[in-house]
Amino acid sequence: MTTIPGLRTTLAGRRALVTGSTSGIGRSIATALAREGATVVVTGRHQEGGAAVVHTIRTAGGAGHFVRADLAEGGRAATRLAQEAATAAGGPIDLLVNNAALLIPAQSLTDVDEQLADLALAVNVKAPVLLTAALAPAMAQAGGGAVVNVGSISGAVGAAVSALYGATKAALHSLTASWAAELAPQGIRVNAVLPGPTMTDENAAFHDMLHKYTATTPAGRPGTAADIADAVVFLAGDRASHIHGVTLPVDGGYLATR
Ligand SMILES: NC(=O)c1ccc[n+]([C@@H]2O[C@H](COP(=O)([O-])OP(=O)(O)OC[C@H]3O[C@@H](n4cnc5c(N)ncnc54)[C@H](OP(=O)(O)O)[C@@H]3O)[C@@H](O)[C@H]2O)c1
Image 1 (cartoon, protein in one colour):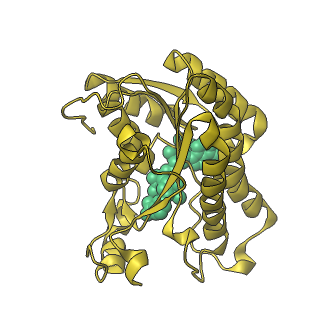
Image 2: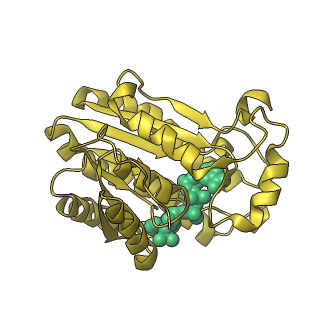
């Protein structure tokens, strides 16, 4: 079980929604935000995983709630999630982390059929658009907030086997910059983190491969879910108040030195 040593208060009073927080990087982001004092709404399709994350948060003295949602279902699901998250958190969400994604296994152009293309665009692009649109008005009315998108280095470089996935992440990077301009007048800061190869409990079978892949980067190792969560916590908090519209690689220097 993940633990949350030393509850802090840098995000006390904030209400966060972290998509895709039933596992992997999202789970670490949710527990890290809770450790900083935020009330965190955990969401995903899997009730069991969500309940375990909420249990971890509450056991450590934090505040967490689970709301089930399938982000592939489109507009109504996004609207329902926005409403149910605010109800669960006890007020307007003022911190949204768009983390959920369809991680597509290596695929060439001819492997991509219409169903896969639709699903990737629905979960990785359409859902963040609809969810951010659903939450922004109440966030603005409550005095502002922050959105942190979880992109990927795959959206910043070309790779022969990840064109579709990379394109969805490049779209999210573009949305980050545009939303930073559009939502700043409403007091909402928008930024993104771009993980490089990152180890999670769920991809343990690939950790050796991730180590080989990152051996020649400045960091010389893959990222951890906690590395990504630390960057999200920073961008979400007041110490990042002058940071708008950045796409911050958290990749051990991969992009800078490739
Ligand atoms: N791991 C890496 O090396 C890496 C590198 C670069 C970028 N990233 C990015 O980091 C983020 C997290 O990746 P991860 O490695 O933690 O992946 P993961 O373990 O597969 O987690 C993905 C999360 O997204 C949720 N999700 C997927 N489809 C969904 C749907 N239709 N509706 C609602 N939720 C859905 C899953 O929840 P349910 O299963 O409960 O629905 C899960 O919690 C993603 O945005 C990914 O693109 C990861």
